[in-house]
Image (cartoon, rainbow, N blue to C red):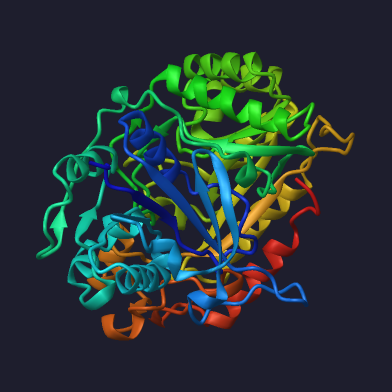
Length: 473
């Protein structure tokens, strides 16, 4: 008897400025997992092609989407959406971020219309942070299985059980022992060639070494999630697979980005990771760290990174206002000083490492708070970096400015619901329900009934800060 066929789906991302920047890794990990356990699968990557004028528009239906269908590591089709995609599928496994939730519903309904016996599983960050809404979803867009955490074991369990009969949605919550994850994610070459991301002038792919985050920032949904590391052998195998993909695409020099929150956590860990990056021939790499770790360890943390091609680090410097920084809880209840953000940038830049600094604007901030952060931002973009990229251009720091939204499940969300921050009031839950979801060109709705300064002022400051970004990274 044939084993059930799983179709992994990455819904479209029209809210991104560019859809093919990073792989959405979860379905690639799970596809490799099923292959390891002898279950067949395909992967459908939905995307929104650009119009003739080069614009990407929000889809009105699945007919506005294209699909790259991958099986056995190869693209077997690439073109406009065709519901025949679902005709032999037994399990539809959707990996969903909240901005993709509407499109995931369309896909589930289309799959049921094409094959009435299909089972639908939804996982990803949307299932984790908006679990009640996902479980309550009815009609043809409903999920049979909801996976709010790791998907490896729940996926195997439902397949081994023969895809149990549908009923009320089953919540399959599981925290995986990552020591058991020995197979790296799939890296289909036809898909990898689509991705366009550069580090220091070199094409880059991305991976992670861990799940979770050791920090408890009040604005973050993942704050306080237990940090679990993948086995070194699996990370090593993934680095090898990405390097092989780069070389197969004709690239002599290439880069990698570590897209987790613990890339450069301490000197010992950084040295070990740097050795693996160098062993696989990467000429440049990027990772994330924390300002206080850079100040605490300085060259002991960053020199092994720099010596093996580390050219950029991401740091959430958040704000130049000590008042706002104290509210954020950046260091798990310990004091974090704005001056450490300045010093972390200086240390990295002296070592030839550029900083990608992430900042926020908060709804309680007044003109003094805004001015302090703008001063920090201007320092970051002006501070010289003692190094060049692979194309011989001076390395330059970059900046990103967003406006804080109190997402469901965050500490700030709870505080604002309770009216605990003076000068700020949220719109009613009914009015703001869809406003967290990003729209085309990375825009978001406005969830605040009242803020200390007008929305237009915050947007003006955001535009100015983002205008300071260099033309290359």
